[in-house]
Image (cartoon, rainbow, N blue to C red; front, side, top):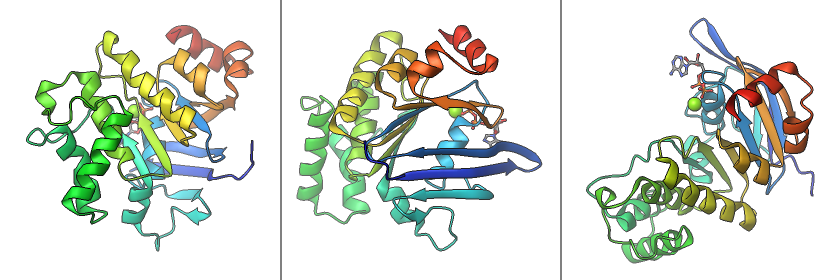
Length: 245
Ligand code: ADP
Ligand code: MG
């Protein structure tokens, strides 16, 4: 694997008021890597993801993406968000728009594609996530798993160079989780660079190049899945994994 430090998070600290929620968090990813952030509720996983696309502002440290300092005050945040796709736990689809309408919105409004071009792109991305037969369905007509796949297609339609996933299956009924993980697995196989927060440990184990275990805003331990799952160096990691396994 190349060693290009495509994403380099270095000593990132963040406070909400007086409460420090990230303490000197560091990790690196190469292009095409999959990194999975794990940790208990409130450990700072979402905050860390949100700092990468500047939905949250880190006060200290450095986040370099493809050679550019994300935390620089001069950074074009809109451009950053075009380049970094994000998929949330809730799907946040527009109820009055069809699947195609939801996916075409960004290409239309942000990338300035024509209606026909945006629709073509939206159709291609919906086919990519296995929803080629639901193009004109409204969110209410889709299952939660299908809605989340529309959410993934919506992010992909911007042709991001990095994808962030924040517990993308946590709001789903158990029987719908598999179809979403399958789509994510497909993206991994295509070589997408992905930073994923999930509690789906078998998925993490199967696809992650590196697991980063956060607790109380600190990186307790990180390493390849075999190491973290089978030979954790820290007691804290072992206890966490035992609890959720
Ligand atoms: P996780 O995703 O691991 O559950 P979060 O990143 O959501 O953790 O939260 C980390 C800490 O930051 C928690 O103590 C949470 O209460 C706090 N926090 C998160 N978002 C905000 C916010 N917008 N304002 C104040 N505190 C926040
Ligand atoms: Mg969270």
